[in-house]
Length: 132
Image (cartoon, rainbow, N blue to C red; front, side):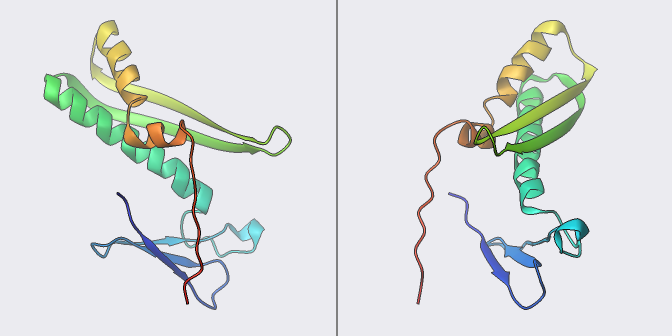
């Protein structure tokens, strides 16, 4: 289970997000949305989660197989289609190294099996409660 805490105070849109181990990330809105662009926007953080998980999953898998995967480059575009009431995530992946076609095909399947990809492609339920 993943767990974070988040806090916003008086500074408009600046959110401090903290992990249980003490890592801190600042989220903010871009200037054109009224923020100060001090960190990733919330949607950039979501796209970043998919990029980080995909990259790490591919690295772990290629290393376990002894494959010559030297670098993974990802480009994630997240778009909200308000009219169609859906979100479209486009992921472009570049696998750099001495890899054959079968290894590329396998790594494509592995990318689709990363935990965040599974979360985003299955039903999501959000439960909210107000604490005293």
